[in-house]
Image: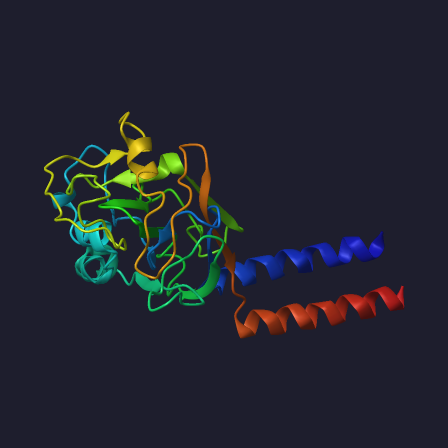
Length: 273
């Protein structure tokens, strides 16, 4: 009992120091769909001050710089440029584009069942407290996943202390239709070998499965071939888990040393009692 009483305050200091010094997080991205289902393009991820909004449901995609390029082609470059030019970027926000760990053919996409981990530098954790992401669902014309609420995922508190592991589960109902290109598997859907010409659409961003035709649209890709030679054999529904993002803390070298030293101290204290 005496050991626990004396060690507890030390452990409290260790936790505080660990959070305050955290400047990187490990981000693991998984495509959890069936082995013959849909893919994801490389994920854009960022840590920021909560002011960068990737999209709003019901609004026009034209109001969000870089979103349409990502939703229609998977290109994260314009979104990265928009982030750099934003207030979040000016405040020191950080970002990265994460590709799959193993390329299928010549495409760095996330195949069904594939996952990879990436260490994201956060910078000042007391400022860049929030996490955002975006990726295109392929094959499709303009379907994407992202967090519309920029403060939905808080990684650090006001003092820069890590708030704990964050697990983001993405379901079929979380997919968005960008509203900029008509949904048609035969009209130049990205990452599909189907022929045809893309058809512009002048709608607003909406939730997938909010239209009765959405399930049929996804099913229409079954039997088609993707750009990397895979055949789509199944689609997904609103209640299906299609992706998972797990965010954990990457201890700094100083934190690791502190933890090791504290462990030795506790071992000695136990032996002396």
